[in-house]
Length: 411
Ligand SMILES: *Cc1c(COP(=O)(O)O)cnc(C)c1O
Ligand SMILES: [Zn+2]
Image (tube, rainbow, N blue to C red):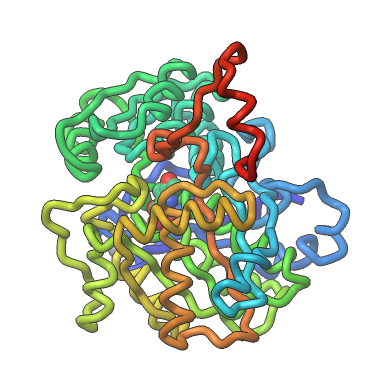
């Protein structure tokens, strides 16, 4: 059970690069590089039977992950998240086969743990000891944690209005945190400007080849968890798009490995109405998205006005027969609350966006009642308690009015 990593391939111009050197984007066209594996070799050991005997979690798919020497694996128990039936929420939409993949149960509370476990492990193996990235919060928190695990230095750049819990997470893990007046791409520009001078390895979304490998394991897990048959529809909150393109890559690999057939889920990309460059490009029939001006949404992970992998996202949506939609912040918040109330699952706002989108899909007849639909609940609502404003009675145990308060139908 070894990594079958073979080479890197540019997803745009097809150029090939050796896998055992450090790489960012393609040096010819500045687009995204994908790791490619010897899948025939991988298929000999990565079988259904073998998987049944391996422990849960991301690293059970070692053959199709990039780390060669397991001593470099930086793990905090990422992956292996539950796929939960959402019966009560599903019934409210007329979708009895609705599922929620609860990625909020990952270390640091989001699926960013998958990508950064893979990327930082591989970077560690290739000798990197200083990493930097721009982040809306979750990627920063995950980077801080995995860097600490590997004794690496992390330099993280976050929009100054990012959720306070993410700042605390970086602080706790000893990362160097910088707040930026601007959005995630402004933070990214600072990383790009100073990375060479400061000796940082840039682990921005899709600007190095291995975060996507961690995220693709969601596709591997879904196949296993659904009894070796992929769902009909996957609803994904798209920011940089690593997860949606990662799962799409996973399905092609799984078919080549002989673990699934040619049938693919329809990929539904969800963005917020206040920042929807991919939805707009999809509707206009374009392969590249224009930068979204004045991006604004309460869902930080999808407040991403520019995505280097825009063509990969749009290609995957179209090839799958899926669609791209936008939902507004009010519907996002309502959906977070509704799923929590009906299912006991606390989603982040981005997760809420998938639930709100699912309602739109059902209403427009874009999913049929018998179809199996999976919502990617990317992050935990516990990281966003600032969005919950409760109005609770405060009781004084000596107050005589207490008697009256609990005497009626109220309690
Ligand atoms: C990063 C993030 C997203 C967007 O994920 P991409 O794969 O970059 O599109 C969605 N939700 C949460 C909670 C995130 O942290
Ligand atoms: Zn290229």
